[in-house]
Length: 460
Image (cartoon, rainbow, N blue to C red; front, side, top):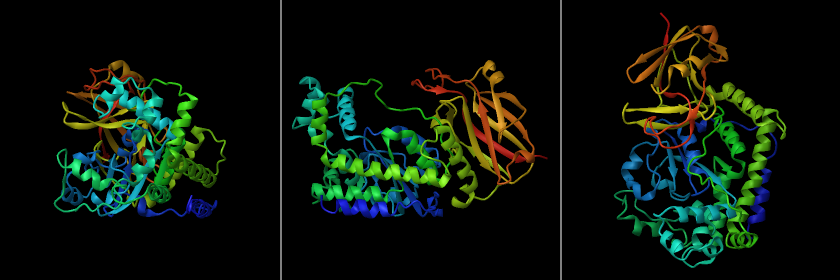
């Protein structure tokens, strides 16, 4: 394929195992925006829930579909730092004029095609759902039918190029349900004059220039690489969201058929997988670990790397006081997605899915009075079992009921604050299946406490 071998050779020359230079351009300053290109059915819903933690609510563009964008000029003026959704990889400059750092996730094209087929079967809102049900299509027919095969053919490449060469006016353009039918043609790279070969080349460039990309089949390793790249603490366990829990064996004939219509996607996937494995090995080498290190050891070393470098890389200063809500960055391990409570009119975040969670603050060494505010969803028995530590040291604490909230108060001696300023509050308590009665949630995640706010003041 034209220039493909050259691109592979030139890229891997850049991956010599030398100590990487870390740049301060990875923080969420107003000069930069991060753009998660969500290819449907690649685990992006789970990744978005994770990525959202690291950006304040008012810096996250709230919509994830083009027809929800509305006035482009107003979006550009809002100073968002994080965009995520099904926007493709070629039109980010419509939404922001900042320097853009891309995130994305790839998936084995056969599994992606089959997951798309299952989604169409389940979702009555997809435009070919009725057709597939009416004709009782199996997966092989779905891959060859003239009205459905495009949904399972080279979707990754097409998504990474979506929006290339568009001529959409950045001033005065409104994208909504009514206008999107006309505008979508201007976002289609093939409509804009790109050949399939050129789309593939641009998809290769997209991977090469991404700040971070993951591989769904290597999900835990992808999160390790994300946290290392961004100098974030390890995120811990994550709840897998929006996934089909039923597994079905795909026939060999269907696999061959899916591979045939996903030629470019397979080449891109194999190329990205090689880069990913090299980057991961390079990360382990720089951390001083070998490729056979287990998950816990890798997480521990990434955490130490974060503790040693976070302040410098993110240009953060130590504070004497902290007034924190979950609407701010959730800098910690093992938390579910940020959510909004209508009854409490505030954001909260469940701990879990494991029974240990932590949240970090960076403060000057002082004696502190700490108040941790939880939405009141737990029993006295739960509170009796709850254990709290600060930087691995057990602390005494008191609990107070305040109407719909529960407040935990901790006296923190300055010796508990690390010399670099880290104050990590660690919670250990049982988890349970989320019931519909708990904050109107209807899923089956394992959850513990519903964190709302933290106040840290110098002790008098």
